[in-house]
Image (cartoon, rainbow, N blue to C red):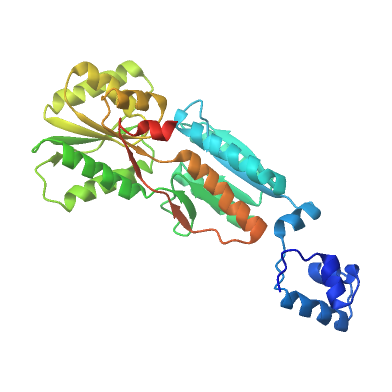
Amino acid sequence: MTNKKKTIKDIAKLAGVSKGTVDRVLHKRGKVSKIAQEKVEKILKEIEYRPNPIARSLKENKAYRISILIPDSEIDIYWQPAHEGVKVAEKEFGPFGIEVKIFIYNPSKKEDFYRKSIEAINVSPDLLLMTPLFEKESFQISQTCKENNIRVGLFNNHLSTNKTQIFIGQDLVQSGKIAADLIDKTVAPQSDIGIIHIDKEPHLLLKEQGFKNYFDNKKSSHRILEAKNFNSDVQSKFKQEIEQYFYDNPNIGALFITNSKAYKIAEIVSKLMKPCTLVGYDLVPKNVSFLKEGKIDFLIHQRPKEQAYLSISHFAEFFLFGKKVPLQNLLPIDIVTSENVDYYIN
């Protein structure tokens, strides 16, 4: 037998009891005689009955609240697709009782991150989703959530201090290895290779680690320079420091830029008229423009829209269906060139 078209009325008729009795058995409320309960349970077993959690949540007006802590895309355009992913998930799951409340913080100010984190917790959500750009503060927030029985999920980057976290994103160490492989295959032998962090964040060190690991485990004629961080707040100073870096390292054949700001380097390198392979991250408009012009060679696509969408959908399916949330969901690492970039942005 199948339960696809079985209603409470059908079950009541098969069991020889009232609809009210079936309802009380299904929802475990009210008194039911032992004989009536056994009749209903026998029919439920025969038809392999499975409850519909969406229908139940609608009927009971049950809502699940998700707070999502995400950087301001007007300050860092990398996050714009992630905001779009949140909206897609909100539209898809909102009708079934999933309430998403967004808390936007300045990605360069840890005090703003912490303040918005407290606001996100104070609405008493069932879940806090966050991009933990600030390690110490993120750990404190996750501990506060644990004390208040609030689930926590992370996307884009994870915490090195938490080994049991739920994380949706990419394997950052592996993406660094892929960047190293691209450079190793395209740069002339005996070239110097630089690792550049622009406005460094802790998770970028994982990409650096993967990059270095690749060359540590491979015999190569390339010389890997010590990683260097540049602050881009003051453009004139940033430009001067990059030019000085090239002057101090005249044998540079390639640069690995560990975040979405490769275009800032490409603007300067193109004016220096110096051949240099550039590998960076993310399909922000300026990166795409320089990629098409041949001033950036490769971009690694981190799928921020998909990361944000999956972060919500995994937990929405958990709340609605009881579906298990994966401890980690590591997304594919896409290598984007001038020849295939339009397939990603159109």
